[in-house]
Image 1 (cartoon, rainbow, N blue to C red):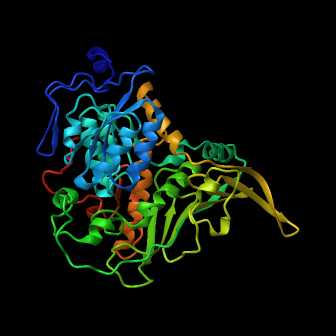
Image 2: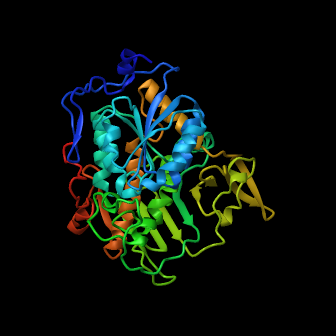
Length: 455
């Protein structure tokens, strides 16, 4: 591709004087527009965060044939070799590697970044990436705090970027059909929805602080979180600590919450209440192993139920995900139950399909409608690339991802404040009459990893 075409393809347009200095993107000249790319132009990617999830992302974008992986970024140099080999095995040249993702943002050849970091690192690359003219695919959950999520939305809109959340359900054909079934009124009036997230995830005993592993820049891994000595639990099991994440309602449950909210076409709840705790055994984790949250929408109620001491609850396995099979709903760990006046819709995440059950006949189930499912990871990447090429919002636009993540964050805030009911104001995205709750809508940041009020 010649330089003229490259400039036309780069979605930020002219970026003269672009630099990322002291943790803030300094834009001297940005033309906020998106140019459509011809099908034969490859989209150049920078991959940020070389953990377990990145393996699937690298493989998925490589197999498309229309994406080039130019960069890998991680604060642990030991993570790079297998990913470099993976890229080279596809026939592409070895990507550049860096422990500072800001080098990727300064590379004018990069069109989009893929963010697969721990949760507390999702918002900063997304906002700075938009400011640098990059499109963004960011893994779920959207953010570490509600304020961050709103800033991600503002950045996407201000700089006209495609920002896709890794909530693949919104690209799944079987879920699109389930949504149409509901919107056509076939399920009747919906008064109640139950969302489940159940598995086995034992707690960990506290461990003393120690020296970080060789090759890891732990201060950089902490990023915006408070500076602290290395702790193996924090580093390896960050999902369960408030400084870095929000427990399994955030880690995994946000997928089901997003699907449920999308299917029933709801945005913000009127009130949120949550109770729970760590009942199985004392451990080092902050977050609960058992949790129930209630979201009142005024005309209906939605609940979320979490259990982590339930090894007999099973996530949907690959054979069901990619076959003409349904899970055993009673012990499906990630199911959603939608109760309408005309039937009960049981739906699975990441494949699994859906079935509508009417009143039983002679003690036998009556299935009124059904659809097999398929794992939507591939079509979700397709949607991201197509959105870039056609200058449109993706299926899992960051606005929708923020609103779904917000539900989980509000539940956690209620729980952490002693199970108080939160009266939510959708216009300001704050809690009426509760300053303690509002103080938890935003975290304290550590220089230079800061998102400014005006993105």
